[in-house]
Length: 333
Image (cartoon, rainbow, N blue to C red; front, side, top):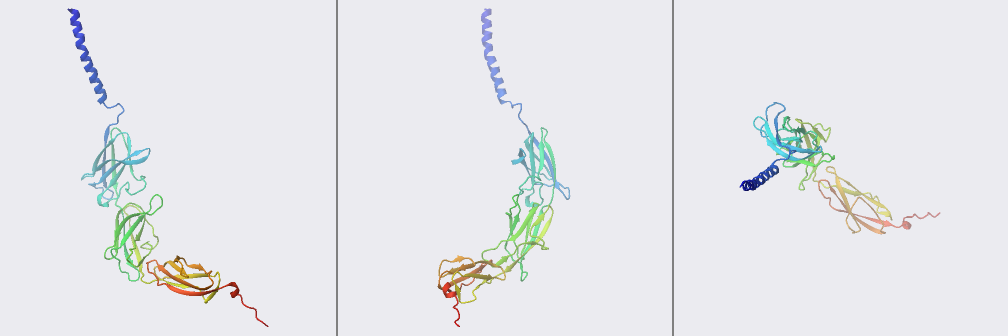
């Protein structure tokens, strides 16, 4: 009887032990590993550099950094009416904080269009999170006008291009605006950097667009810091006249192998290209030709200026003599 009872108890204990072991395994499976990194918060405030007042509706991007290189935005937050924002990230990491104000009212400490993150706000986040405070500056501004040089009249609804220097020293177009009824234009919300302003030439107009310059005419390149403004005046010349082209032929006949040169001039926009056709052959771009055909040669030529005006084709003839014909005969005595 005792043995039977002991056996029953042993048999009853086996399922209980199995259940306990299974429960333990499940708990171990679901439990986070000992080395797991918990999420923590980055608390921050953003305010205006000039007044110190908190800025609301500022978008805050938290950018992860791996091996010293910014990778991607891992969290985004928006500041409240007091300029306070909160973003959740992984602890034990390094991040860069980027600020963006809708409408470009303020520049950021990490400029969105810059090729480098050197001006970003670095943050090392530990198990207790981090606190970041930032004061944002007003952006740079470029204003100016587009006028016709001879009359001073503003040119309206014309494309104005803003070129910014990148990390490779190139000048890509970073913004485009159009001049108003008085020829005025403005670029706002600009990051600090180097810029060139230029007018875009429409195919239908006849203006020559000159290089931009500062208001004092000292430099074409604008070096702008935060909260700085600059004024640019772009003058253009109206050009409705075609260029004029001449040959350097001073006589009606030349020796075989002679070189004929074409000389073109344009008072306003300048000569863009000269074309000629020798003895009915294919049209050729160039300003000089060598005469190798004996006898009468026909030259057709014209030029095009920078404003797109095309000169009416001209024609000139010249007689090419052989070397024997060119030699002068001795005088008999």
